[in-house]
Amino acid sequence: MAEKTRYSDAELEEFKTIILEKLEVAQRDYELLKASLTNMDGNDISDTSPTFKVLEEGATTMTKEEAGRLAQRQMKFIQHLQSALIRIENKTYGICRETGKLIPKERLRVVPHATLCIDAKKQGVK
Image 1: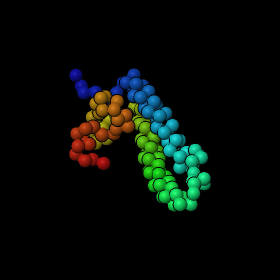
Image 2: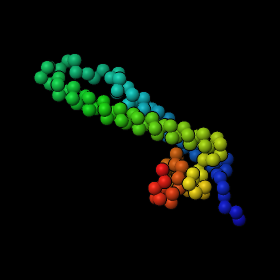
Image 3: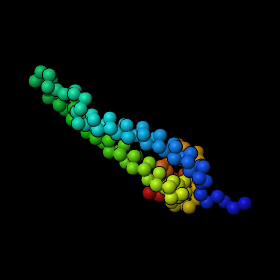
Image 4: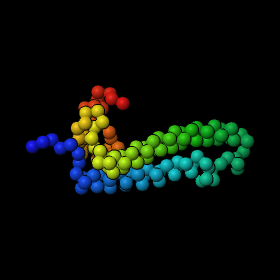
């Protein structure tokens, strides 16, 4: 029997469902991070005494920087998930970009945006 070269339409549909669920959660998380960056939650330092204001501003800056990094990382994750959806539509999803072999289903269920099989990943392919 010949080795399978791509996942079936039913299998692709299963992966699409997984990706859409992860995408929904990721976008919700991104919006929360974005809201915390723009201070829409109303937590500011306007009502604290001048003594604590400097300390609060420093902590706020650090918190915003961290939220900014998290937001960037979340956006990158969203883009990877969206790219995976495009690969599903093109029926190229789940094919290792290095070896051309199918990435195991178990890996794709855990990392649905994966483009490398474990062997290629271990070899340090970028």
